[in-house]
Length: 429
Ligand SMILES: CC(=O)N[C@H]1[C@@H](OP(=O)(O)OP(=O)(O)OC[C@H]2O[C@@H](n3ccc(=O)[nH]c3=O)[C@H](O)[C@@H]2O)O[C@H](CO)[C@@H](O)[C@@H]1O
Ligand SMILES: C=C(OP(=O)(O)O)C(=O)O
Image (cartoon, rainbow, N blue to C red; front, side, top):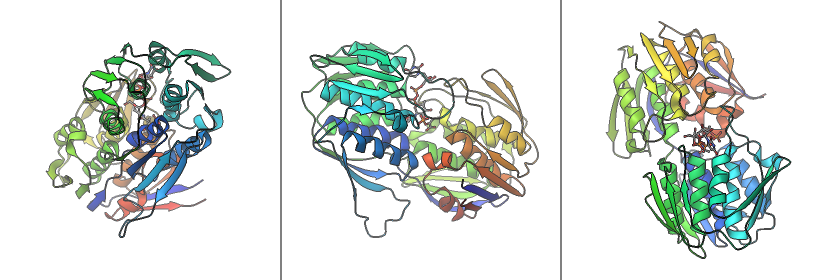
């Protein structure tokens, strides 16, 4: 298995291009199942999760084409893909394909809405908690689906099509909102979603669906209304910038020091995280087409953080922020409210010399003077990248194992950091 070697201590200086968001690209690709016409997606990141979903869609019979590179386009500027689901041959998403990635379960919504049936394996994804799908199933049942669980598969059917309904989510769920949006877009009548997720990726999906002919209002607020239509058409849509990648590199600069422009991204996608970063002492300035992040020799202030659904501080940046706090002056309290088991990075950060104590959903981080490089490994995507950030600031060499987690969500990580002065290389097994 590949490893990443980092020799820490070098500040980061330069420009990092931000890719299209993995968590937007995945539901957008799935939305291609809603129409027989072509959906063209621009700025799709080259990631293992995207490749995995491409295989799943291919298994259903979706035709996938990568549009030729434009002059000057590098491997970090995303790809344009065309997806055409004019000949869906199979409405089953098998275990082997679905078990690696949470989002793949969401194919259940367009398959059910367009073909009246779907059989989808219960999902996998990052090992960060139990991650049930009860609320996704509840939403589909409200829309009139008959659902049973059989041998690890969710089997969904509708005899006379889906019907608009009121869906009230008892807790905010991104996947639940995506599923409800896609299913309701083709349901008969009006659907109202209450307590909808407000994440930018939900807004991106709704905008794309509207380009495809859907009638969705209110995405980005807790109250979304969808007037179902009989059919949807093709469209062209650019995936929004990855706010988690943006925040991750911002935290890397805040920790390792330096001066970096994160380009092709937007500060409004992650205000909560950028505000907190400023409080730690990083200098954050919006610039045209991106964000400039600077930190000079001054120390890192300890700041408390609680993860929350958007617009709050994202759980997908919690591990990276914890890495930063390991070098802060004083004590920081980090509370994880979204997933019950998202502290797998704590014991790995400890290998580098971090002092962190866990009390239920609270991590108490005592800042230390310095971290020292060590071999580490992580069990999920964001935890892995928190170790990269810590490795960049640690003295000596850090070896990160199980790199496939990073490849799920960070496009050209070594190249992007390497060009800013980081000493980072991939050692192929
Ligand atoms: C591919 C993708 O976009 N993944 C993101 C998505 O995951 P995902 O869509 O899986 O996360 P949800 O927003 O659905 O989960 C939020 C909370 O609701 C719970 N829940 C969810 C569904 C359900 O049926 N029942 C239930 O209890 C979950 O266990 C969790 O505690 O949003 C998370 C929260 O921002 C992010 O960390 C993930 O990176
Ligand atoms: C948790 C994540 O992904 P998934 O929902 O696919 O496990 C993530 O992107 O941080």
